[in-house]
Image (cartoon, rainbow, N blue to C red; front, side, top):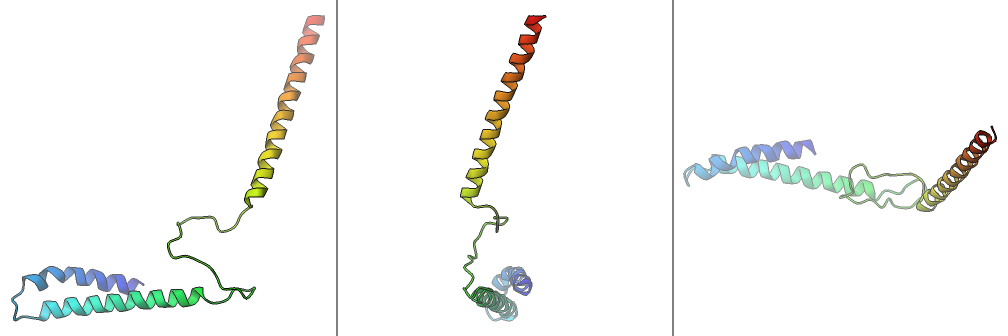
Length: 116
């Protein structure tokens, strides 16, 4: 992969000299074509080996289903949506219980203050 980008960078460096040289001179044009060819071959080889690696079976014997354009940092594992919804409902119930407890405590403190 890195070889491909290095070759591509070198080909970009030789693009302008190959355009500016005379038509009879082919040195810059040849170097440009050579580095572009190396870059394309390296990128194609990298892609080929990546796709070959993706079709290998997993431990369960099923092929891995991955996409090349996946967002970086996307979660790989974690709780399901249903589990998260259950956790949210539990937290909402706990909040309701705490609010009710605070109201009872406030009434108890207000009742003691009025009795004194």
